Every structure is written in C-alpha cells, then in structure tokens.
Length: 497
Image 1 (cartoon, rainbow, N blue to C red):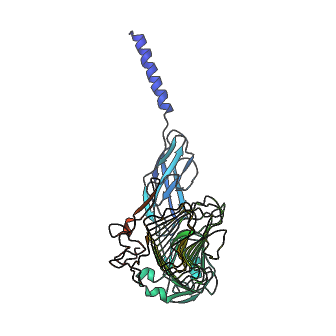
Image 2 (image 1 turned 135 degrees about the vertical axis):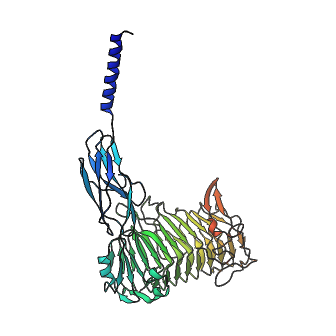
Image 3 (image 1 turned 180 degrees about the vertical axis):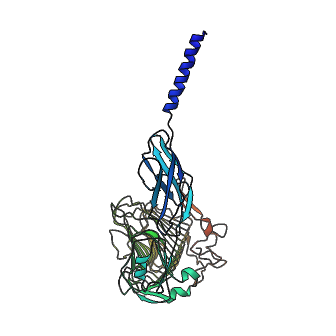
C-alpha cells in the first residue's frame, strides 16, 4: 500500500468516526434537588440539568410514587422545557405516607433520571371536641392522611361529605381499648351520616346509631370495628364503592346490615369488596344484600368470609340478578348463617323480595364452601353456577339446597334434618358426589364447633376440579387436620379469621 493511499484511508476513517460521534444520541443528565416544605399533602422538589445530552430539553420535572424507582409513567410534575435549575411543586399527597422521587429531563433521545430521594409527609391528629367542636368541622379542616379522633360522648351529626383520605375513629384507634367504641356514639337521626367520595377513607371504632343509609360509600373505603345499631342500611356501598368491611357488629338494622349497590358503567366504576368477620344480627330484611345490576363486564370480585349472620327476616346473604351476565365473581366461605329465611338467596329479575325461588338466569360464578347453615327456613337457593363444597346444612325447615342450575356442583357437604328434602329442584346434570346424608353432625349448639367424634372432621376436600382445571381451593389457613372439616368451624373451635 503506497503512502498516498494510506493517508486517504486514514482520512476516511477519521471523518467517518467524527460524523458518527456527531450523530450519537444521548439522554440528559439531571440531578435531583433536596425535598423541602414537606406538609401533609404537598412538598417542594426539583432538579438541575447537568448535561442536556444530544438535543434540546423538551420536558422536565420530578416523578414520584409510593414505590421505588418512579418514572414518568407514574405521578409527575411538568415544569416546562429548557436547561438549568427548576423547582417542582408536588401536590395531591396523602399524610403519613412515604414517597420516592426522582428528577427527570427528556430530549429527543429519551428521558434521563436523577438519583432517587424519599420523604414522608406529615400527619396530623385532629381531636373532637378538643380541637373542633363537631365532627363536621374537623372533616373540613383535615387534610388527606389526617386522623380525626372523637372523644367519648354522644354526637348528633349527619350529612357530612368526606372527599379526602382521612381516618375517623374513637380513642380506640390510639389505645386499643374496645370500651371506647361503645362510649363514642354518633347518632345521625335517620339521615346519612357520611357520604364518602374519596379512596383511602377509614371509619372505625365508633358506635353508630339511628342512621338512614348511614355510611353512603362511593369510593374504596375501609369500615372496621364499628358497632351499628338501629340503622337503615348501616353500610351502603354504592355506585363506585368498594373496599373492605370487617370486624363490625350490626344489630337490629331496619333493612340490610350491609347493602352493596356497586355498579359499573361510563360514570361508575366499582371496585372489589371484601366483607369479613362481621356479626350481623336481626336485620329486618337481609344480613347482606348484593345487587348485580344490568351492566356487562363489571368483573368485580366479592369475598364474603368469616361472617356470623343471625335472624335476618329474609336472606342471610342475598344476591340479586338483573338477568344479564355481569362478570362479577363470588367467594362465600366460612360463614355461619342461622335463623334466617334462607342462608343464601339468589334472586332473578331484579326482585329483592325473598321468595325462595332461586335464580334461573344468574350465570355468575359463586364459590360457596365451608359455610354452616343451621336453623333457617331454607339452606340455600342457587343460580346456574354455584359450586357448593364442604358446607354443613342442618335443620332448615323447608329444605337444604334448592334450584341449583346446570353449571353447579354439590360436593362433600353434610345434610341433616332438613324439612322437605335436602335437594329440591336441582338440575339433573349437577354432580352430587361425596355428600353425607342424614347423619347428625354433632355440633355445639352455640359455637357450632363439631365434637371430637363428629362426622365433619377431616371429611371435606381441599380442592375441587372440573375438566382438569382447579375451580376451588380451600386456603391452607382454614385447615387444621389432614383435610378440611365440613362447615365453618374446625374441631379446634376457632372460627378462623
């Protein structure tokens, strides 16, 4: 190779490398500023762009989330374009919550992030009547994440709207002293007490009396450890409602102890609902009433477990079909239902007046397992897809199970002393294997615990399969022996929670 050719070759390589370096794309380099002015619902942050990379800055700000490594797909501020230092006002936060934050900057090559910082928002406790004379005034003054503590006494209040994520409780919340629940009485005088429109609200530790649709819940809310007396629909999960209702006692409700009217359409997106470990006594209508409504693709999951329902004039648990498949699914298990018109009542045609006819047009799947149904008029009326496993059905004066449709199954249940018949108008295609018939379960009459020689002991199945697919599996925490017992209570006497 001659010198002239070698120089030309080297020159071409140099020019090519230079052009490639000029065309190289680089994302910005940004530094996250210290978080300051931290309050209950807001904070101040920002960043400095160290290097703009290979193009002009088209967006910058901070991204933040309650989990690590937030990106611009999470919550973020938008603080304009251009280089230099910027300040970000972070808002819409929840008190007492830890957030992770990173500055970001975007150019044509992509987005660069600064180092991650974290901070915890402040949280205030507002006391009634020490700080505010009424619950209503405390709610207005509170910020998201605050806790309102109500001192013992009787409060006459109603029509309070809660539109921020606050906790409203008694001194039980601070001390764990359950006597504070009974001493902290809120009387809403036949009106709504709270209309709740914000996710993250908690109502707990109160004795709530004389309300009408007392808790009108239109968001994802927790209702725990309350004592409701003489209300009309103590807990009403409406429209966009959902969340958690647990460890409440509901007595002498003038309609339903818990009423779920969760629907899904363009304006109301309901959320999943867990109803567990509640005691509901002497409801004038149903212990728990759930309407499915006539909107397709709702796909909401209901879990009803560990509840004790006694003396409802109609159904212990009633599910009302509007004759259109909604995609809602149910797990109903380890409940004790006694002294009602029916333990489980499925209804057609939007009918809410329990008539024990069952629901021929209800196709929603109901996994109904390890319940104890004793001393009702009817054990359960079904729909087309009720998977009934490990239930104890005793002494129901009009019969055991009625009108279970073609996709149902009745497996490994115990039936004893049920009026007319154990099976009434059951579709002939429904499998009925492993059931124990006409054998006394030998239960304690108060706790419904099986005795040591009960035929219920280890007589259930842990899993039900159909066509090679697992349809139902009993969680391990409910099994104390080699297999599940039949009924809601294991031999050790624990109504497991």
